[in-house]
Image (cartoon, rainbow, N blue to C red):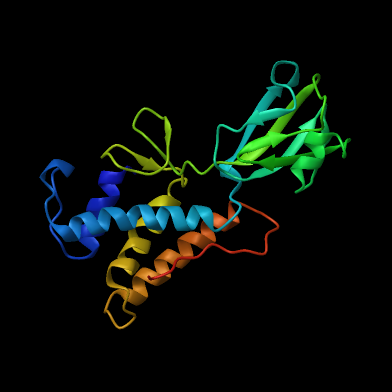
Length: 210
């Protein structure tokens, strides 16, 4: 389901009239709902180590040296050099100065740092993307802005998570007649997605009403 379809689903759940396109939107409430759809999407995707957010990046160290500016904003999950997993160390200056060498890596100012003098071999980064949406052509983007954009949450879970999660935020009042139903549908959709995304993780996905 794309951004426009999710938006109209939310409107109907709230007993509002659906719209024909984004160009005709002028109501402040409509703009608020569009923003909240993205907020729900971002909160859910950032709150758990979803396997479908993992990406790989292959580096040829003979072309890069020991410092590489990362082209992504997400956290690094693991780094492998010549099929051996490296250990993370927070003291990047020790790697740059040559004081510390061996199977280590660090990150400084959004750059990957390996031991001084590294100039050969292959390196593989596994990281978690923070591009939480796609455009109508399949390109990755930070968030939904156009009608044809879509969440990277897999269907059919995305529909219930975004529609009911947004409704919860719009009303944010447990005494509202449909609040209990929305909450039940939202929580169940998250549980179903979790069952399809096994992880050993202390965190659980959530949504705040603020």
